Image (tube, rainbow, N blue to C red; front, top):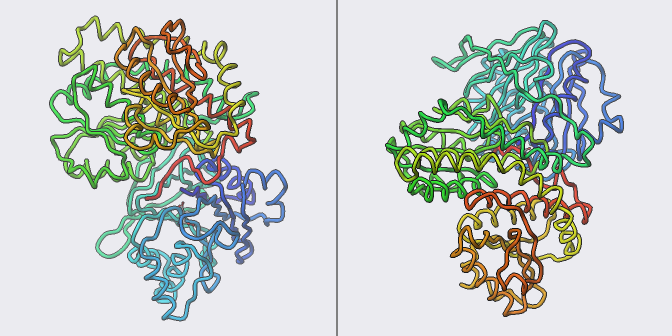
Length: 610
Ligand code: GLU
């Protein structure tokens, strides 16, 4: 999940690399470091913390100007968060300096072999062994391409790495397997990085490095090699023009990206609603014929679950939905299946593993991703680009809403196609969705003060239930996740009908619950059943704050500890409004607690490790 950058350019390369690194910080930010090749010597500087903050304090001013630079922002998988464990890592002979994203699964075995050859690792990371292997193989061959070939042959797991070496003052080298890497060249420099946002301000012509490929980069071009016949063979790889990448980042007057991005949800919804029918038709046609599964991780999994209800209700289609980290343990996907994957970054490791399996067995894959040109986008049979705009806050807000809307559109179109919905019902539902942006605006303006007040008042409550039935169940799960992620308070999401089977023993006078209620007239059963569950909590002294709808006259609403009104659109789209309300609750609670809003501890935006 780390961010990697390598630059070959002129004496301005350090600044270029640091600025690119800062654009990657959403990927991980527990520590960082940089190496340059200066007068045949490698100079390295690293630290714990955030590269952005340290750069503002002048951390990099004493890094000597040099044309070759590698840089890294880390999200530790192996080894504590210490300066020593921060990347770059050096080989035992000091000739190689390397940054890595991924996990070397056989690193303990390699460590042991190195030890037997007299090389002792100095850090706790899995990464360090790669630097030593490079040095070892170079001792034997004296040839850098052979060295890389033999080194990657020994690695198990996943990696994207970039290194510089005293053996070659003109080039940096990179290799990838499963973890992402992309490069671009201009007449004056080549930049290699973990994703396109790092590169975009320098060039929009990008080459996505293929799995197993190796790259040798000089100041104005990069040459790709593939592994063939026991060696690396030069190969032509096409670059693609990626015009859309959002460089206009900035909080635009908002105190945090999280709130800015929540406020951008109406636009993200409008963009999703503009997806062209001609692009969606082939997916819908395929769904008529095949079994459907949906997968994602974290919030994207909850979006998948919301989609499961949409397909069930609107298209009478049962959907297999599993979190991507467990998907392959449960489901033997075949070419009878159509897989929909959901990943904001399009680089989520676990989700890509499912994608690869699906492709292997010939199952068509639709990917819903917010990163144009991401791995999931490129692998998919039917890539859907969300176009929700860059999401910088590590917590997803507008992107998960846009994912849910895209699933709603697909389910509605399928329902129309297979006759579950009449044409006018389907078009009516799609028309209704255009009212969501306005309803969201009402939440921001009219109902946010109450949400904020509730969040502040309860900021010291350290244990919560979040409950809901039907689509409000994944809404509750997602809202609890958001609450935990940013407030660091314990919030347990579950179906409202489930907690009476055990978890109810936690309820006492000091226990607080957030419940999500549909509008009574939209879905009477779900409303009444949820009210019954709320009564079960209240009977034991528990306090229940419910999110519900305006003008709700039901008598039990009055007995609630607290009630937060939201606008209404229709039965199927109201749960989407609750997602936004849940995000605002989490945001205001975390503000009241003084948390790191955009970069909560231990989180990373793009989870590119297993
Ligand atoms: N495994 C490496 C480390 O812990 C890289 C981690 C990552 O890519 O997130 O330093």
